Length: 326
Picture 1: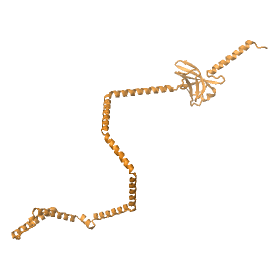
Picture 2: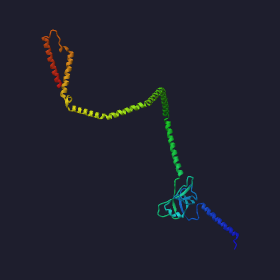
Picture 3: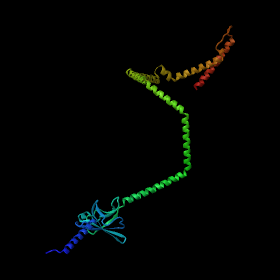
Picture 4: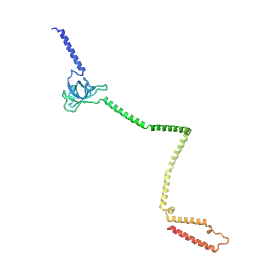
């Protein structure tokens, strides 16, 4: 039996319609060749989210958004997720809205929970919104700009309040710079002379390098000679002997020790020195008392007078000695 032409046209039209419908679904993110489960989530705002937006689990695309519907003060989205991933979605998982990238757009990320049971098909997942990275950066930039504005305003205020002080400081710096320039100019000749002398000195050092090296070599030789002659050892022995002598004197041994440590001898010598000084003063003041020169000899009256003076002098000396002893 022949197939009519009208039947062929109708059959072909049905095939075209089915293929077109499948293509539309596929372009919308729904693969009719795979089985999927439906999940829901509610939000207050879903700006940037569109039908066919991707649904990801751990960064892997597992489905897409099938429908967005405003219900009162909430927005409900319908997500179609492949049934192969149903066991990886615990009942307390969170459907988080986040940025799809720097180019814009919004996608849904399934944050897995820790429940022991999995979410059933047509279950409602908890909705959450992740802060937008670009928005956060814009907020931080705004805060930074506000802080910079505050800082600049503060600096402007400080500058305005201290304008006179800053002006005086600049003037003082200019005066100081002029003074320094004047000092340098006036001392330029001395500085040049000093530099010239320094160059001459360094030149002399360079010309006498060999002599300096010979001096250092001679000094090394002298040091070695001293070391070989055991000069340091001999000096140490001499110091030890000197210490022994000082120790002997301190202990009172020997003539020097007795002279230094005998207090009675010291007092006697001190008294003798005082008497000798008094005698010399009296001799200087009255030389005729001690030196007599006469062509005819001394009379008895003068001899008696000298004897009386000598007795009086001895009495005074005895009284003075008694006073010193007290």
